[in-house]
Image (cartoon, rainbow, N blue to C red; front, side, top):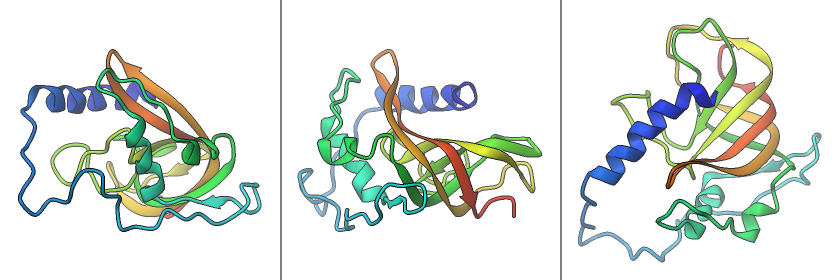
Length: 177
């Protein structure tokens, strides 16, 4: 999966590094204000009762990132490493395949090019599925839920943090059905 998404994420990281930072608007809240989304989770972390995570919680990891690409994952997120989780989001399969056992799960809808908001290391998850699923269409983005074992491990290229979250043994509901 990383072979597929790495060039795309590298292009995004390079563009973010080369383009000047946007100045915040007058209406923008201070950077230390947390999202109004709740970060509570439910479940026990077992396969039968996975933690039900949300994007507000996963995005909190951004607080531990530094400019050189290193990251210290906050304890309230690190505790989910290796547990069974469930999260809903936009599911993006690789392009031009009939079946896939890999997906990118994202907070925001993004078509891989020009429609939507490109993901960051904090609002997307690489997912490997237990079994491959059929894909209708060449590049189908849909909303769904995935369950599996969460792994939290930084994936860097140089000083760019490209990924942080992976789901192994994933079972998906909402794509290819």
